[in-house]
Length: 286
Image (cartoon, rainbow, N blue to C red; front, top):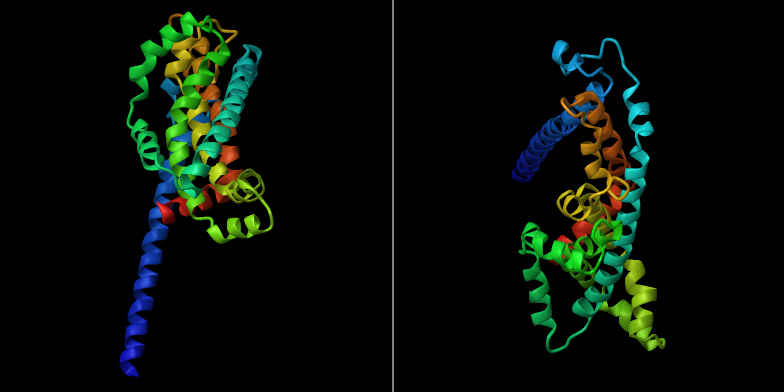
């Protein structure tokens, strides 16, 4: 009896130590993540040369609020809405194709299943930037150069391999008995997909939406290669429009970065529970 009590106390002590260590590491990582954002916010309220005369982590003296109205007046929301449009279009296409591809790979058995799945996984290893020149030539030949929707093809294509991989692993966690019960009631494969598998995959789809949405929102290489005029450029290219000809107004650029980062931060706060559930479900099976 005494041995059991001693073991219980040891395990309880170990769990407390582990909890304290985890809490300390979490607080430390929180500060590491917040320091760059605090740096951006504080310095976005300074005048152009105040960063040289004041400490970058000191409170602005005086507070300068004209940077934000200035970037709005110079067309910030044009870049913003173009980024929203391209991300929404690409996300709808990517999630639709990924769901249709993941369903047979996860729920059906056919001859080429392993080969197709291996090919999709292998595509994840292709570096995105080695395709810049071929995609540029293809876009030019198709007459889509300097068109916002020229980004749809590259964005969707490079998001699909990882998306299909994650969503296939997620759909494998759904019990087959649910689908078999529906088939007994007269549902075919299409009905099972739309009425059972797809609704149960909301967490996985949300995970993919957040993961790929952030990448598309911040993507620079393809946007810089395929877009030229200011009327077509997306938000990552906006920084080039707000720098001066002979000197950069760093507080103004930091204000642009703050407004650019806010939408993704808000979306993550809203959907963080679905993101964690989707990643955990895929990890358990994968």
